[in-house]
Amino acid sequence: MKGFDISSKYHIDRTRGVEVEISQSNLMDYFEIARINRLTGVIVEIDMDTDGGDENDGPLPIAKLESVGIPSGDLKKLMEAGYHTVESVAFAPKKAILAIKGISEQKADKIVIESIKMTPMGFTTATDFHQKRADIVQLSTGSKELDKLLGGGIETGSITEVFGEFRTGKTQLCHTLAVNCQLPVDMGGGEGKCLFIDTEGTFRPERLLAVAERNGLNGPDVLDNVAYARAYNTDHQLQLLHQASAMMIESRYALLVVDSATSLYRTDYSGRGELSARQNHLAKFLRTLLRLADEFGVAVVITNQVMAQVDGAAMFAADPKKPIGGNIMAHASTTRLYLRKGRGDNRICQVYDSPCLPATEATFAILPDGIGDAKE
Image 1 (cartoon, one colour):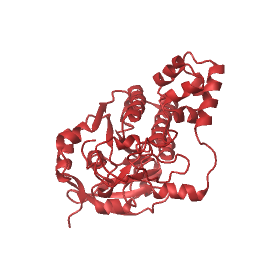
Image 2 (cartoon, rainbow, N blue to C red):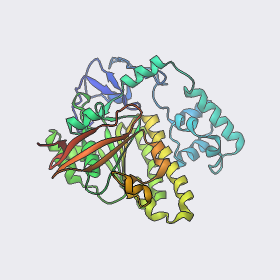
Image 3 (cartoon, one colour):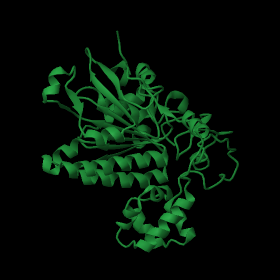
Image 4 (tube, helix red, strand yellow):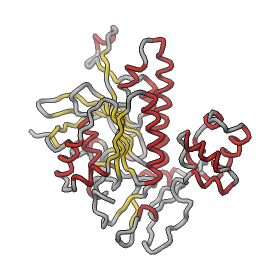
């Protein structure tokens, strides 16, 4: 793998985003043998000389269903519809499988039943889940104060939404994370590649090179480890996630960025007459993002725009701006961060919503080489 030190003691399971200790280091593709129990999520220590361990660990490729009698033709149809793992089929409602052209109700029943048999979807203990949470990798933002606010950094396996008005550092944070995710774990990275979906045309490789230089990484290698795509409409934006799922099966990705998740929805749908259709499409897009985070353990970072409140309540609000997307966006995001401008290059990040972080603030700065700590 490029862009980070392969001799690091701790490596990341390619499918879950958690630390796995390898007993020795060499140029083998350790991502193929570093496994973690899918049910408990606990770290396992594996000797590099072994044959790879239990092949049931980690997300199962959709091809595994062929061994239980599912025809290869039906598997091809599933992959064309964006289902590349057994887990993705097991997590999907039956009607979604039935919507695939050429899949009858009888076939759908068999596919769903066999997928559920291969996927642990029952209860586990809070102890096991707590252990899994303790092993989750967090990606450094580049600012110590911001990392402290987030309890260590951007969490893998969940969706982090960053919203704010223009020039508050949303895109700059995404560029910094795209490089930092390639760092070793002990340096605040995820030892994986980055997928970057750009809807506003603001992606700049030059920024990646500046952040890479600060971290002592090879610039060309860093760029090679970032897969970039420009989305041109909301349907294309959703289709790119299906392609992302196929890419994550082939290689270890630590981060998926969508900058911004909502800008195309503001132009593709207009007026109250299309509000229901817009929210339904947005919900499907966000559900697909959450599915990718669950299946592959990647950190998902999406940026969001804001709008000004113009109703009577805005007169009494300290800050009349609120994120767009409504309750659909609010419920889909695990952690919501509100960015606003400070003095000069300084920016303020507030935890707007989180299941475990207090609603506090931290100040960071937009520097020539990416996000960093604010200067007094």
